[in-house]
Image (cartoon, helix red, strand yellow):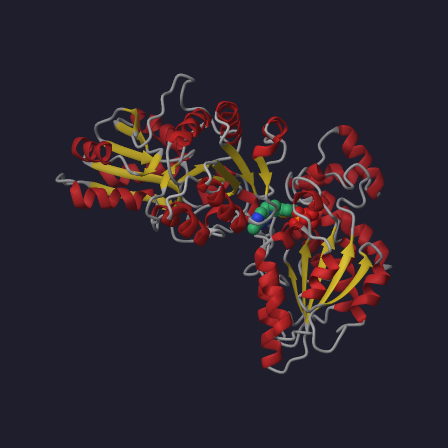
Length: 306
Length: 278
Ligand SMILES: Cc1ncc(C[n+]2csc(CCOP(=O)(O)OP(=O)(O)O)c2C)c(N)n1
């Protein structure tokens, strides 16, 4: 997803001279081409994330479109007040790109895991949040973000995520995507874990459970219609995310359902259970340890609808 | 064992554990090996059988990405088991690419996000003053890390509160992730910057163990100021093709040639390396 983002940004920058990339000493090699071809529009601000956001807001006030980039916790939590005051309160046209969604930086440990970023970003007025599921979506979303006026938080993975979409996929900001139809239960996920969700749904189908899968790439503003429709039509919803349960996608969806759905529904959230992950291993191993792997999704579905 | 021998041994460990894990940061760890050897074998007042003694010196690895150097030293000092090093970044292990205080004996502070160690250390030093303890607090920082604003908030705080029991050692290897520190965001005039913040400053060759020890034995440098020792180092020191090359910040050698050269220069025999990979 990272490479897809960087190459899309390069394409946009070729056409739109206002686009800039601000990096906080992260992005070796992948930004080389951008840097070489647009030397004035690439700034490595150093290991100084708070300053990066403030500078970006200043640039934006003069017509630039800065895409700021570093590892997720450092660009969301470290800089939070700069994002709140300089970007959100003033509705600045600054894009916040966090690389390493969820637990993907598995061995780098809890300082590098991104498990509260959705929560803290979504509570900021004016902020929009996009969380792509695969490289194609990451690319298409980047084009869309450049067109959106105002703050956007873009939560991307790193490298090697499996493809979900074809090249001709069309991304629509603010609209969830039904990836697979189904009648008995709906799985709603965001980010690269959409793939694990699709795999779980396939196995559930073999067990005779017709499972709808929805990808929510835009976490804010949330596509209420697709959620309410799923509630109405399937009567059971499970949300899946690589994020803390506190304040994540699942909690946003729960609010929508509780306030607006008239259907009787069964509901369950899958995510990190309010704990940091100090377990080491591969990304998959961490997901299993935290109870958010494909197998966990399958067993939660079975116990919810039995 | 001679301290230089220990340093050599530590580099071997770092290399073996990182290659086995396929992760961690070799070059940033190699940069501070001699500093850690001096601290852990001559300077720090710590007792491996009484790690929580309230009078102990505190050490904070603020550049937490050099964790493999710290783990190797802790093992060499008998604070953690040597065998634990084989579990670095492995499934179910406790030794991650950044050190965690809640699970690893001898790790005082969890780090990994740059620019936290000095504030934390200043708090420990202030507590020492309030409680009339004479322990010292040592914080190892990297140069890129000194670009964080928080470092300078802490620097001002420490000077204002006359924390002469606080010691910063800067691993000044002049490189950060993407390039040369002074090309990306200059720290110079670095010594003067610390001085103007009210610190006592010394400089040393950061790979000369006896000179580092000399400089740390003469603490505090002045009566009422915090201390900073600027250690001039070489990132990747010990493997010729890594030295001073930014890209090696996070890379692990994987080509045959790279491994061949590294093993030779570090004095690791092939068998030990192959064993370690299993
Ligand atoms: C707050 C924060 N921002 C960014 C990073 C990612 N990062 C890890 S090391 C590093 C820079 C490395 O350069 P330096 O600080 O000089 O350390 P060296 O490895 O050269 O000793 C960066 C940007 C981080 N760990 N924490």
